[in-house]
Image 1 (tube, rainbow, N blue to C red):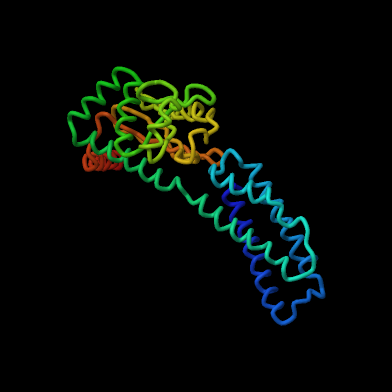
Image 2 (cartoon, rainbow, N blue to C red):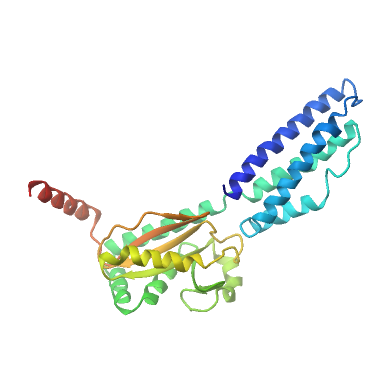
Length: 293
């Protein structure tokens, strides 16, 4: 279970406690005395259990939570709500900070990656179509393919940046490297903060033979796995990494691979692509030959 799934379960439990508190407040309007010690016997233990779960969530997933959400969580826990209760309506007020925290935390963990993923997917699709229709761009990629993997990385990084995506790769545990200049990404932190709509971990591989695509993709995923994630702030896509496979011809990329909370997307960039209609005709022709053969 991911931290987001755990939070959703916990948020439901918080909502239940708050509704119980609201019902009790309504009852206190008739009789403000808590003769059965409902607050102390029922609400207090539940509040303590919820705060313990919130604390556990923060400690267990500190490296995965958005930084602002983690700070809000730690501040709420440090306030010590639920340490002491008396019998009476006034103690219900301590549920108000819990309700406030729940609302704040939900806002801070909203799926900031959704827009970043959409932008990244758009950028790659844009590039794939450029390679089909733009002869100048196609020639640049064909030349880069013949030169070196890093030449393709640089071209790709500049294209992604035109969509607001700052792509980086990993060269060692904890080492995020800029694809264009080859230096640590943190050296560009100021300009990234001003310009990037998302930061994306990419691993690039050249596919020289069709039969090596699976091996190269696995190699790229292994390299990406040494990255712990989260060191570049909230703009970074922490749950999605891109394995970019550059080939000469159209090939079938591997399916997405999920490892824990991280999904590895495989993007194929053919430098000599066929148009979709030509590809479809070729596939129909192969199928027809197979059926008649």
